[in-house]
Amino acid sequence: MSTVTQERLLNVIRAPHISEKTAMAGEQDNQYVFKVSVDATKPEIKAAVESVFNVNVEQVRVVNMKGKVRRSRTGLGRRNDWKKAYVSLADGQQIDFTAAI
Image (tube, rainbow, N blue to C red; front, side):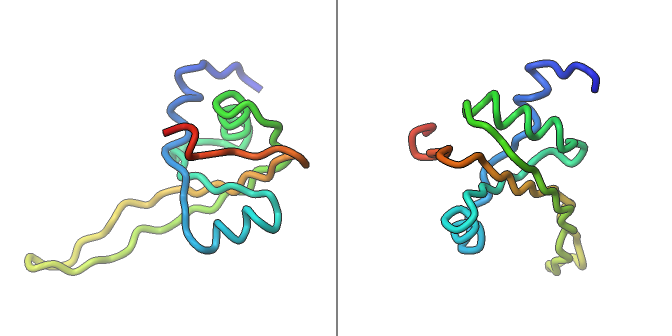
């Protein structure tokens, strides 16, 4: 594995993705969901979460989300594609998003 710079790790995670589904995943399986860079790899996502939040990551699952087609006054448009990462933490570990604000 090639060395990843600290600057790259800070650009991998875009934002936490918060919804009802992700809240249930967090309560049941100790998983957190993040919007990540489209070109991010699983090892980069793992390293970024571990360095930013000081937790131990057990597993990373990635989903490529297709952009929705939206209609406007001028015709059809399309939102950008994006990537979502489900991050499973070790037992006893947790991330508090309210403390980071």
